[in-house]
Image (tube, rainbow, N blue to C red; front, side, top):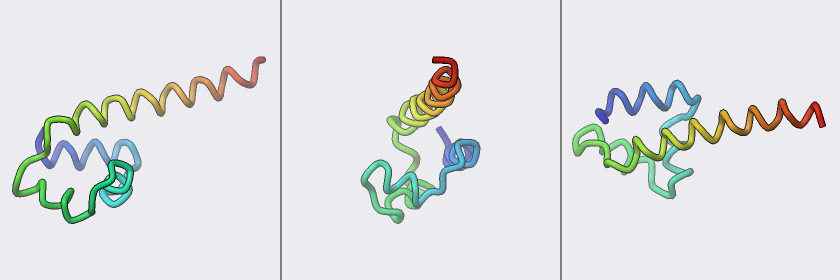
Length: 67
């Protein structure tokens, strides 16, 4: 995943770099350094599952109304 794709994915998930950094227990500067060093491989998988989790939470919220 390129840094540009990482930034676009965060935007699509309504996450700032700071929020992402806090979520994964890293400093903002470490995440910002990925622009030069490259985005670690685990980030793409993490964001995929984060998005999936958000969708599931939304679905469960809808289903809860029909209990």
